[in-house]
Amino acid sequence: MQRVDKLWLNGVNQRFNNKDLFREDVYLDIEKNSATIIYGGSGSGKTSLLNILVAIVPPSKGEVYWGDKKITSLKEANALRAEYMSVLFSNFAFINELSVKENILLPATLCDVKNMEQKLNEIAKTILNFKDIDENIDLDMLMQKESVSMLSNGQKEIVALASMLLLQTKFFIADEMLRSFPEDTKVILYKRLLDYFKKERVGFFYITHWLGAMQITKESGFSYKIYKVKDQKLQKESSCEY
Image (tube, rainbow, N blue to C red; front, side, top):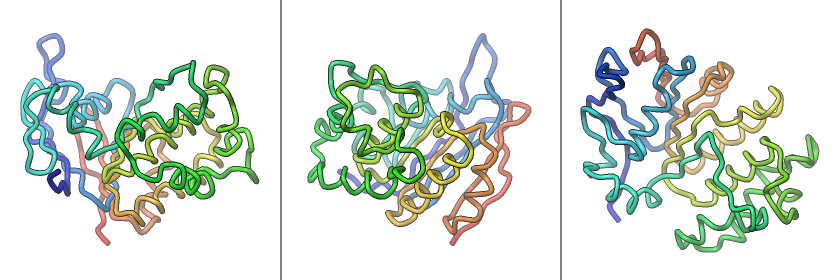
């Protein structure tokens, strides 16, 4: 497996109804050991960029690179994706016939992650430990449930987060993460995630409506770049390297 220190978009755009989604082609790189955040309104193109970056949708124009590897087909991307990135989509894909814990472990099992149980216990005791805040979303409590079918959206998001964190890839990609939680819980969990990504030198790419994420990221001591989608353009608002 080649070493991948960044994911990047080289002059990409997407056409819908014979019109470009962005007025200017998009150049964007997501580097290890830093956060890249894009915010903007619904329908502004944030999710389209994420889908192009993780190569589940090809761009109408431009190129996608994972490290030095140019991604030329979705089939090729499907074979490589799990080696480089964990992707937390806004919709959840669970198997109702499996228990909560089995759903969490399934992607890691398919990717042959070592010491899964130990790593999952570490995640449950640190990042996703909510026993003193709201035990309904505490991961240890959730893993005792026999099915995901009766979980709330917030509980499902905790399960999905645990599953993707367990893969321990060098890039973590998230679409509208934390949308199911009240503000105080959202802040606590987001700070924990940033601390973890900083410690593990993970490249974090996050698209969101949540304005609170920007200020928390700026105060985290984690290198960051913040972009806003406005008037069909991707505009860089601020950045800092540590």
